[in-house]
Image 1 (tube, rainbow, N blue to C red):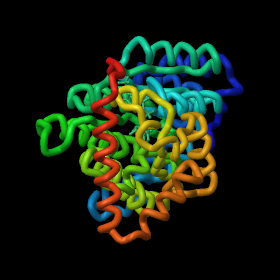
Image 2 (cartoon, rainbow, N blue to C red):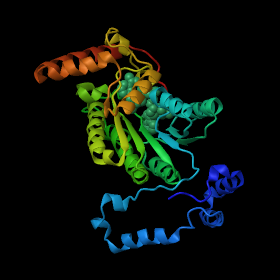
Image 3 (cartoon, rainbow, N blue to C red):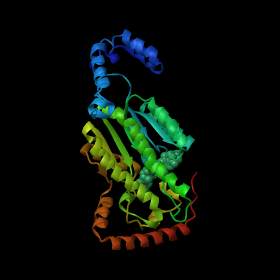
Image 4 (cartoon, rainbow, N blue to C red):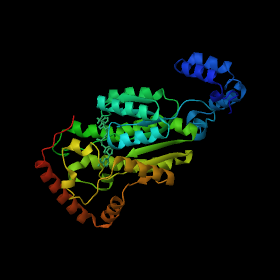
Length: 345
Ligand SMILES: NC(=O)c1ccc[n+]([C@@H]2O[C@H](COP(=O)([O-])OP(=O)(O)OC[C@H]3O[C@@H](n4cnc5c(N)ncnc54)[C@H](OP(=O)(O)O)[C@@H]3O)[C@@H](O)[C@H]2O)c1
């Protein structure tokens, strides 16, 4: 439905609408006054009656999520979890450069605030920061309430994640489940929250940052590899489910990347792989992710050597893979024991 008044051509109308953004009643009245949308009530009412007559469970997805053709001047928003550093921060810079407003999360308050400040100054976009530990239910609920108020979510990047030093059998179950919350539950809940909006608009992008570890079960990171593997399988199925609405879904599976990830783990990976697997820069990972989006690739593995390794290790017999994995794990343990790097807070 085309607006009778195009907001961007009427500076005063746009200013009034912006000011009224948080006052729904006043806004509705103002919109009516300037002739947007409410000049067409009969058509809208007909659509509404159709919805009342058919039970919700019998409605097709197209009926439940009718296409929204209305124009409005809300700016497009990208949500990125874990934008304090590394890949999330690189995504934040990428989308801000494209002119999107951002809603970013992290736990290290001062660092993420300075990331937001830097982005606002550099690209002139709006950046909202939410301090949230995604393993904590209350933090996730508050974040969801903030998302509820966003009208024009275009992209969701589920990036927040971390590695773990403790083995599954030796660790408390609570620690292990916390990883499940951050890598699995939070992305699922966030996707479920933004999907109706994206389906209505027949437009949207969801990027789930998994890992190459999704392909490689390992004794030292049982939950890490399993949760990342879930994310990969989930993303592919989700693509099959919502791709028909024009929603792009990507599972990004980076290999070793220069970020705070390994510093937090207190290990030096280059001493484990002897420099065989190169570290990528977060900006290169993001650039490759964008390339995959353009090509419509659902599973995206940045780095030629990483892709080669996945192919090689997937064709060898499983028993050989298990032996290789256990030997690597022994080496990791030795390096960890001999490493005295400070753990970041
Ligand atoms: N670096 C690698 O080699 C590598 C390889 C494959 C996959 N990945 C994946 O890439 C993603 C980004 O990692 P990165 O390499 O960019 O590491 P990073 O620099 O450590 O960034 C991780 C981000 O996730 C956030 N985060 C961690 N735990 C969180 C929690 N419980 N609640 C909320 N936010 C949390 C961190 O926020 P705060 O720091 O503010 O807490 C930070 O912003 C992760 O999902 C990781 O598994 C990384």
